[in-house]
Amino acid sequence: MTALRVVALAIAACIAAMSPARAQDATTLKKDMVGQWELSTTERSKTCVVTLKGDAAGHGFKLELEPACRTALPFTKDIVAWSVKGLDIVRLQDATGEAVIDFTEVEAGIFEGLRQGEGVYILQDLAAARSMAKSMDQMIGDWAMVRGNGQPVCGLTLTNTEAGPDNFQVFLKPKCDPAIAQFNPTQWRLERGQIILMSKAGETWQFEADDNAQWRRVPDTADPLIMLRQ
Image (cartoon, rainbow, N blue to C red; front, top):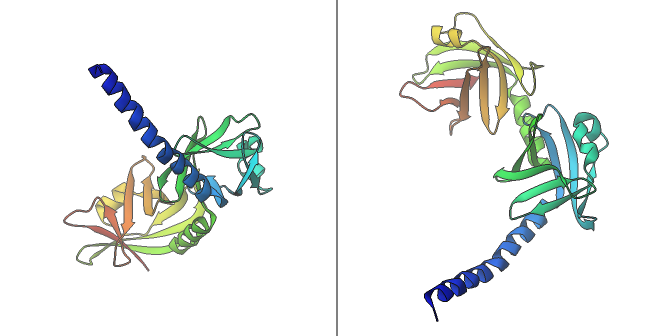
């Protein structure tokens, strides 16, 4: 047997060995996706509930969209079914099986999809999404910024007043540290577990919750900046 034939047989054996696992991955994903999901813009300013079912329907599987979907997210009017493509793509599709939007998992239970010319959309478990909404509501109100030694350097108020797509207004209080006053954030949002503050110039500061229920600016430094709820 030639060396080339040995290599070809080895490749064929590997493919055969991999095929059941690949099929199982897709089957598992399909099973995991059956249930209620929230389809939304990245910060949930526009949302709708999608119920994915396991019953076959045309080129995919059945789904139900709540009536408000067409108003909140107009592109959903073309969605009639869903399917799993490849190993990890969740497709919301039209009557011909073509993608209206494709999602891939970016975090456990959170899928992200892009529509050209529109932006990014999120598909996540409905219960988890509503829990996140509750968390965002808890962010509204007065905060203090302090240094690692506890020294106050600024006060600010996070509001639920819309300030553009998926963002909300934030106001600094008087007598802030010069560095923070210069940054002068005017908008905020909650994104993937981070508080994002944004300036008019487009600069962003990110804060992550730590084990002490404080929000620390990331990346961390020797002189950290911390947000504390008042």
